[in-house]
Picture 1 (tube, chains in turn cyan, orange, yellow, purple):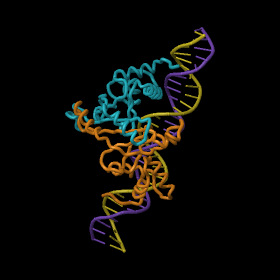
Picture 2 (tube, protein in one colour; picture 1 turned 180 degrees about the vertical axis):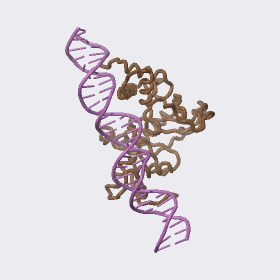
Picture 3 (cartoon, helix red, strand yellow; picture 1 turned 90 degrees about the horizontal axis):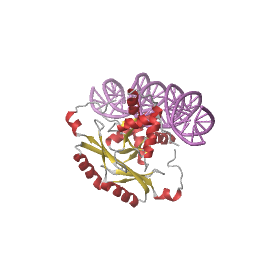
Picture 4 (cartoon, helix red, strand yellow; picture 1 turned 90 degrees about the vertical axis):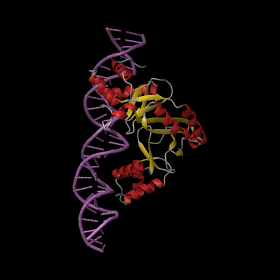
Length: 137
Length: 137
DNA sequence: CATGAACTTGACAATCATTCTCATCAATAA
DNA sequence: TTATTGATGAGAATGATTGTCAAGTTCATG
C-alpha cells in the first residue's frame, strides 16, 4: 500500500509550481530553501515513483542528468527544451509515432518504444543572451 | 595538430570490427583483452574526440551510459536498437527533420537540434526470450 | 639523423549523480 | 491506542566519467 507522507506531498507541490524540467537535486534544494526538511534520497525515490506512474515526465539532459517535470498533458508526447533557460514546451509528433512503428516493423523489431527530444534557443534567450549560465543553480 | 598514435589507431580498429554500440569501458576491456596496453582515460578521450568529429555515433542508454559505434553512413541519422542484444540498425527519418524545424519555428525557437532513438526487440531475440532480463550486465 | 616544442598518455585521484543500507520514524488498519 | 510495515534520511557505496600532471611520443624542422 502506498502511504501519504509529508515528503511526497512536498515533492508533488514543488513540481506543481514549476514549468520546466528540474533535476532531483534542484528540487531538493528548492524544498530545503523553503524550510522543508526532506532527504535527497527521498526526493530521488519519490521522483522515480512518480515517473513510473506516469505522473511526471523525465528526460535526460545531454550530459546525462535526469530531469523531471509534471505532465501537463497525458499520454505520449515530446518536448522542445531551451538550451539556455531550460524552458520546455510540450509538443506531439503526429507522424512520428506511426513512422516509428513502420520502420521498426520493416526491420523485424517488435515492442517498439522511442524517445524524441528537441532542443533549441527560445526567442527570449536568443535576444538577451551572450554567454550567460544555462540555468539557475 | 592532431597526432597519430598507437592508441588512437587501436580504438579506431576496435570500432571498425564492431557492429553495435559499446561503452568506453567495454572497448577498453576489449583492447586489453587483445593484449593492447591503453589507459581507460585515453579510450574516453579518444571516443569523445571521434564523436565530436562525427566519425562515430554516440547515444545514451536508458540508464545513462554513453555508448559508441562507428558511423556506417555519414550525415544525420537515427538508430533502432534491440533492447535485448544491443544490435543496432541505422535508419533515417525523412519527415522528422523538417517536422522538427517547423514545430520549433512555430514556438519561436532557433538553432534546433534533435535526438531520436528507437528501441525494440529484434526478431532473433523475440524468438528466443521469455521474460529474461533486458540486457546482460 | 638529431632536436625540441607541444601534444599524448596513463595511473590514480577527484567528481558527481544516483542508489544502497539500515536503524528509526510514522501512516494506517483494526 | 497500537501493532504492523512502508517510508525516511544520513551517510556510505557505486559507477561512469573527467581532471591532474609527470613522463613518454610525435613530427616539423635544422
